[in-house]
Image 1 (cartoon, rainbow, N blue to C red):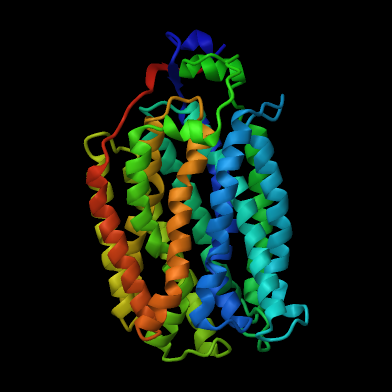
Image 2 (image 1 turned 180 degrees about the vertical axis):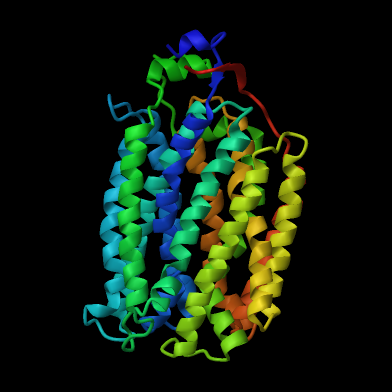
Length: 455
């Protein structure tokens, strides 16, 4: 049926708006689960009694997990085909199940009687976060890979923008949970070392949304079988040649490597937003630094609102990004990341709610660009045969700088006078550098397409 709509081998069909919606909408649930974790990690670990100078340690584990997990999932899923489930969907199911368990455990770390500031509590939290990120990466990859598998070059801007619009919507939901629950009377403070109920319930709701979104995607996304996939991308389905990661890397398109350099600078600073924003806001606006204080917990809620703001901005800008093309894509990326870098500076040195709001509006512009445009450029340069592996390996360019940044924070944080605000400024500088480096990337285009829609 599909082949009859394709003019010749090597052509991916134009997908309908409904097809694009169905393959991207479920990403909202994955991002609810991921965002409720990233938005509250710094808050949880400081509540458990972690020394702020050592927060970088806990943020090494998630990117390390992603760097290992995503290439492996890519390699395995490229070779997987289970009738009625598909190639990528079995891994979505596995990731969802582990995520559900972790979402129930992580916010309760301080309730198991390990003791405030104890190594047992911190290690339990760290290992839980590790599994959370492992499962989140397993859940995210199928959504990325089906775009590379099924979407032609003329629609990749739209597909990646749509996926990240839904992801940003999921982020909005996750980030405002604690604030809304607190306004409804749910406790936003707790005994020293115990995570407040407002955060716990947010994790529980995120688990339910993740489960529903996974079921929705499995029921509605029908992947191309191996023969159809090979026909559309123009390679032999019965190719039995075994290739290692090294072999595949040696044949990677040049755009894979140049985008990797861009990603290093962009993602070096992003972990500092997750780690230090709550502390910076509590010091700048509330004038407190004690994690057990009402002011600090209020700053945690405000950080959730600010993340919701940048997610809403990302949704709005993402709608406009659907119309990007080869002539406008890199300029949009450049300007967006400059705006995001300036936003970090505004948050770092502003002392009012309004200044932090303005800063995160600018960060939202940068955010949608950095999570969508590089993937559009990359997938347009892939040939379809090893898309899962390349997307997984590309994630290393996102994970490695986060690991380097986390390790470097042990030196940088004391060097800047243990100022969390200065750490946000450093994040802004790196974002601007990453935006400027997009001009070294030369886009490659290997996919062709037909204007006939699949029926």
